[in-house]
Length: 217
Image 1: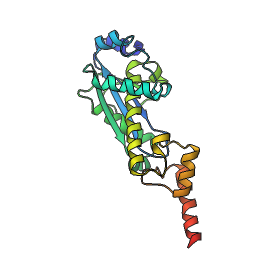
Image 2: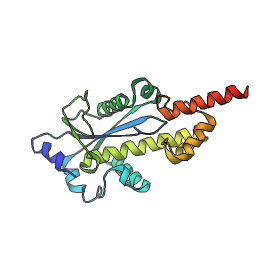
Image 3: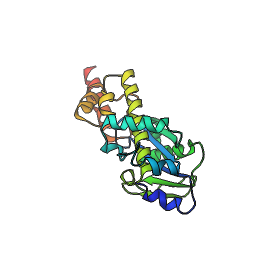
Image 4: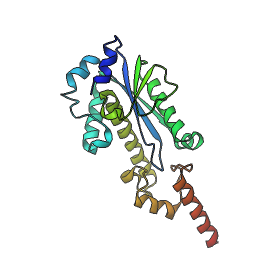
């Protein structure tokens, strides 16, 4: 899980950041990105210790994600930045560009700028440092895996907060993804301010709700 980091450490670079996002696919809520930059000695020592089993957040149980999230936040050897693009930005820019914005914000939120960036998935333009895109990077790079966990847990907490504000949709359970229960609530109540109206299922739910209200008048 440190093969990519070592490639740049061996070139004399020390500040290598992993970047990943959470929330591209849901119908509601923000997209959240994170950047994590490890001290080399810590990562080398703890990849089979405190960080053993750290990988793509989607492959981890919720309790395991939260445990790694707490470890990362508590460690002075892990520098963390978080970037968020809200629903208005997603609808205005589209999800691809909003995700790119969130990733750039995450890197900019690090205590110091990295010398090289490892990003999960496709190449991202606009980073303040050279970058390498790694397909499936959250399962191949410890730094990207850490960013995956930070982004996922941060977003889950935001969705639970939205659920406390408006419990009609069950955001705490499905985190905004288009589950059957979520779709049922969406067609019953129409979209909330937290929904991404640029996403087709949300637009369709809004149109059906509008027609229903018109016919009831």
